[in-house]
Image (cartoon, rainbow, N blue to C red; front, side):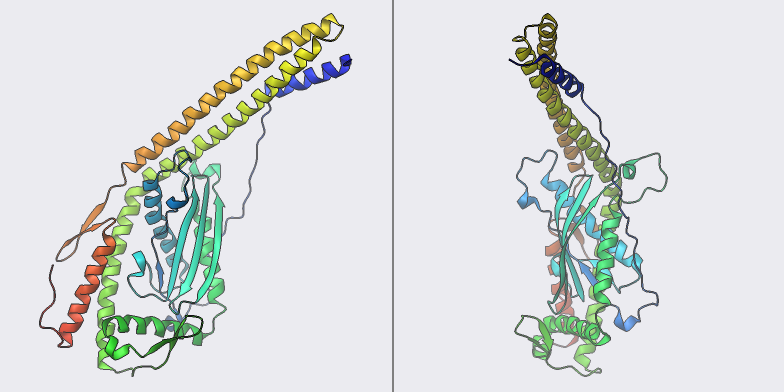
Length: 397
């Protein structure tokens, strides 16, 4: 026979569980600042950095994540590299830092990344850093959690919610760079130059680079500093930089247009996620508490005490109400999930391709930007051939 005090204890526990409990988690993180060299790096030792368009990670999505739209991820994959570029430029530790799709230019260092998670509260990137010799500096997963203050509109001078993550990438790269001696740094720069030259004149520079047993580029011979062909290639490279700079204007315009609606989307996504988590927790607690209340009420009916039986009947009623409340909360969770999808869809509608005018053409900078870059490279080759007398004219589109 179940004792009365056991029944009372169970009922008290049930009442507490059914009412629910509120808890607050305070998260404190050290916000990394951009590290800089104590003494400026000599220009001859500055490495140029190319940042690829991030892999949006949509192939890994199951399709069940509420509010995650592939087009949103694709927009983020163009937005985030620009923020990283600005961060690295502000550090003053590097030479030219540019966003370049599909490595369509030659740079000393390449940064590639995949978006593993991005929901307004969490940002998780898988980053790979590699130099022009194909030596991988490191591969690392970066994770950051946004503070609730990041989206507080009453606070002045709000910064990018995940700026600390970009700072950390920049700082890690500087730590690796500091391990290199001047000779290694200069070798990376020369390999970059020879790779560019080889693309425009394989006959003249094809045997200047080799590949070691690890699949990395090595220098087999060096051209003379006053080599006229090399000087022409350097001039072509300066023109290539001009087009790369033009691309940065596009990405800058894209980021400026995307910045405010994207911030609002992340803020709303953050708040909806928090509400969704809280609703799910309340739903779970109420269903569990309600079930226990019904169980306690049923058990109480077997106790030889009018008070216990009365309390048990109340427990059954309260428990049933709690279960229904929990199920209602579950329906509310669905509403929040639908709200997330609506928010994502509203931003999705704003992510349209942009066009920019060059001197001789209008370039659509969207999915076809890589094709446009390929056309530009062909024009550079025609210019080089014309200057070296190999063709009579420059191709025009």
